[in-house]
Length: 218
Image 1 (tube, rainbow, N blue to C red):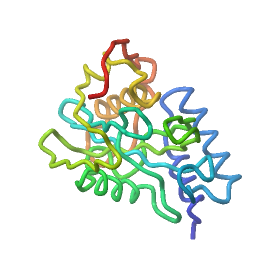
Image 2: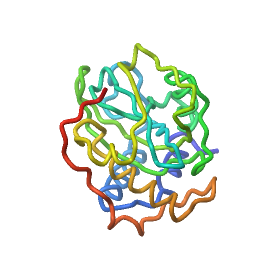
Image 3: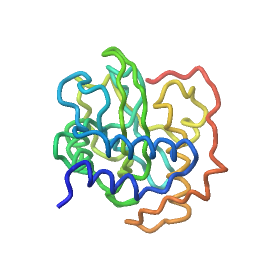
């Protein structure tokens, strides 16, 4: 039987990196998982200072609109998500997180209940810096989804169209959001069947870069 770090390592190793940056983050993550006996956050806000996180990226598959929350502590517009609890399957973190934070059930019907993107990110925010080792999952939704935000965590949240995401100031978001969006867009174009977990690296050279603007997270 696989230990939790071993099972996470299998998940990470199965992802096809979209570009050299994701490949480097995947290597970092695999080395960390091999060397670290404890991959979970044990004490708030950030102990140990490098720990496992699941992002639950809520996307409307019809137009690639994305729901982002105005995260109070991070000071950024981010996908929902949370720290993986000890022994918890990262997909179950997504299920738990979206229910706690958005009051909806996680619908994995776009790509499947497997991560499609990995990042290792040094974070800031009001609680100080730490390193999030993040698995990015895609869940399906639409502006009709009955979202109710947790006001303790978020100052607000809204749907962003693909055009708004591309034209907004990248500093508003997770630094890897535009690369994730481009990878998922390619996956939906090339593998449109629900349940497929084969995001295509072939799209990587065409990744768009968001333009600068003076938008703020509402």
